[in-house]
Length: 257
Image 1 (cartoon, rainbow, N blue to C red):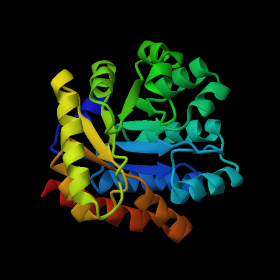
Image 2 (spheres, rainbow, N blue to C red):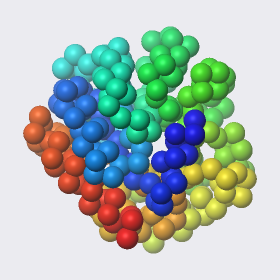
Image 3 (tube, helix red, strand yellow):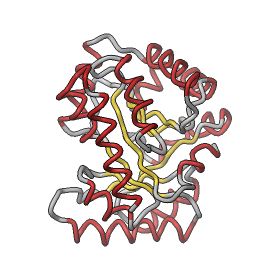
C-alpha cells in the first residue's frame, strides 16, 4: 500500500493512464517503461471492457481495438509480471466491476496482489456497493481507490473516511473552457477530503495540456491524464512509444514547475 504513498512524496504526482493492448500488449509494456523514464509517478493500466460506461469515445475506441486484438485479463496479468521484473513503479488497474466479478473477485484481487499491483479503480462501483470488493482488497492489501465527484458534501466526507491509496477526484464539469468553474469545485473537493483524512488526492477529468495540468496541480496532490495518451496510441499505433514519452515528460515538467 505504501508504494502508492511513495508516488506522492516527490512533489506533485503525474499519473498517466493507458489502455492495455491498444495497439498490442508489447507496445503497452514498452510505453510503461517510457512513461516511467519520462517522470510518471504512478501508472494506471486500463483492462478493456466491452461496455466501458464511464469512458468517452477515445477510450471506448481503445477498448474495442484491444478486445478485437484478443486481449484478455490473463494476458494483461502476464504482461504485468514482465513489467514487475523490470520496474517497481506504483501501478493500479482501472477497469469495471464486471471484469473483476466475471474473473472471480477473489481470484482477480489475489492475482493482482501477487503480481505487485498496488491498487484498483472501478469507476462504475458505487460507494454503497463497495462491500463486494473492499474486504478482499483489504485482505490482499490492494488499495480500492475511491472516486469522488463534486456532489454532496456529506458523501465526500463519508467516502474519504474509508478511502485507501489515493482519492480520485473527478470533476463532472470537466469541459474545456469552464476552467474557473472547475477549479473552485476541485479546490473545495480536495479540502473536504483533507478535512476528514490525510490522503493524497489526484484530479482527472479531461486534462490534456501542460497548462491545464499546471493549473489543476495547484489544487491537488496529483494529476491524472488518460484520453490524451490513449489518443497518441491510436494515432501512432506501434510507433506511439516515443510520442507518449515526450508527452508525459512535458506534463510532468509542467506540474513540477
